[in-house]
Amino acid sequence: MSLTQTRYTISEVAARTGLTQHTLRWYERIGLMPHVDRSHSGQRRFSDRDLDWLSFVGKLRATGMSVADMVRYAELVREGAHTVDERRELLERTRREVRARITELTDALGVLDFKIGMYSMSTAAMSTAAVSAATVSAATVRAEQ
Image (cartoon, rainbow, N blue to C red; front, side):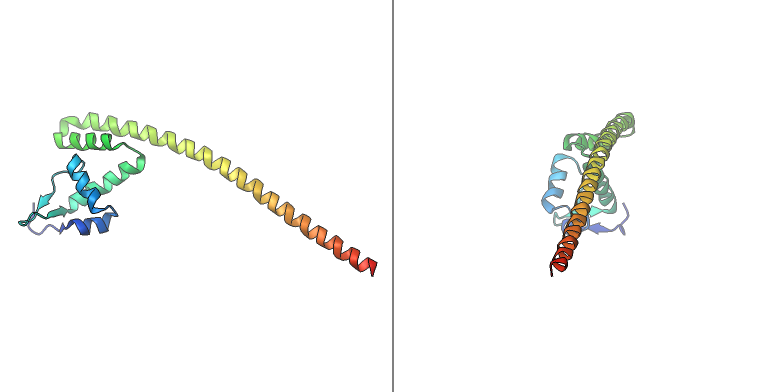
């Protein structure tokens, strides 16, 4: 590791990632984070590589991957290159699940769009009816005068 490599405190990483310090400590405790270096006083010092890993973990979280699967993936990465096939299978399974969710959400979006369109037409029809009624009322008042 280079002596000139940028190091970040836990509060800086929290600010950059949007994760809480508690979450960062928890990730480390459960094995989701690789070993985080410490300063001479024992404070965590995160590297750019750690930030890249946290970004990747954020993407995994966004897929809905379970914490257990994310921890398993992290373990496989630490175990080395001989685990590439198992890592790929884990990611492929997650991709299939994401695609299924995208299909479900696309269908749900279609239903919402349909309903919104129906309500928009109803609102427009009600507005047209109200204008017509007001026009008839005004014409009736004028005719009676």
